[in-house]
Length: 265
Image (cartoon, rainbow, N blue to C red; front, side, top):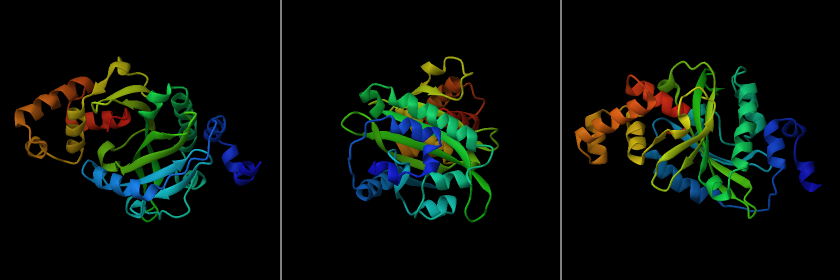
């Protein structure tokens, strides 16, 4: 009863809440700031745009922690934000799609075997209204579902939120995917919105290909990527050809947009 009193009627009315309340949560608590501080340092070397990190508590869909850089990325401060607030800044066309695929993705992850669930990532692109410019920007959010309770239910998600407006250009609708991160750094597509892609379930990128995609997204040339990763120029070219072949893309710009929509970056 005590938990019921804390949950707003708004959250009860959306499909994400319905999925979460079916899970058997315990009262695990985590001190997030030390974790986020380290992750920000690590991710800053790989990020392909302005980003911030937040934490979602799936027991009531609040945000117990947001990194301060959110003001620079989305024009909103980190204080007092939750799912209810997010609904007010989502693009009106994206809101119903967001709620629908959110429930589908979380439900899909919840039914995975526990070890696979820990390695899963929920990735999605959507638009929100920037708090300062009031323009709509595209965000790419990657939820790491690694914080489970003793029964294997999702308690916390640590997510990386990146402004990808300049990378994907004009996109007709939000996209989403669930991927699994392997121990060797590669990612495997499990399910998602791009259902018309042939052999999508067999698509994967190696750890090195993901590094090259991320650096290309940051605007690095093949020569700069070669220097950054300390591999030969020809090796970079070979990996790029592999990426273009896998994504059936004409150039790296198309490949980057493709990888984003499938949750591989």
